[in-house]
Amino acid sequence: MKIMLRRSSEGILSAYVPKKDLEEPIVAMDKPQMWGGCVTLANGWRLELPMMSADTVLPITVEARRLSEGATGSSAAGVPPFDPVGD
Image (cartoon, rainbow, N blue to C red; front, side):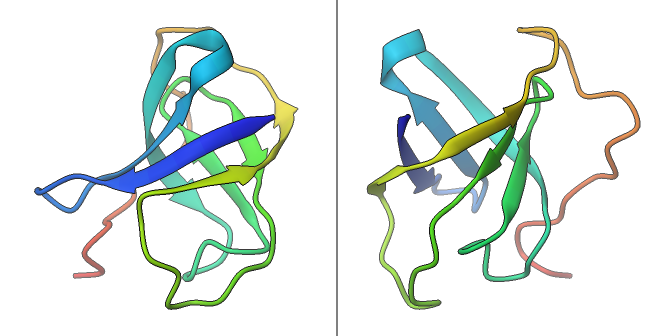
């Protein structure tokens, strides 16, 4: 599925899924650079992202694969908080 990834002015990463008209913050990442790994959205969805360069400029539209689905509109239980700034 096509998704758009962006970083807000506050530094929060989010994914927008146009087909579902859904935008959710990214709450966890398997890899520090995000690319080539899985990310977890606040609603529980896990998306596998393509391998791309670490210096890829956002926003960008990519082809992602949904691995699992949580309850739409609810927070992902048990997902550790993600610090997008890396502090």
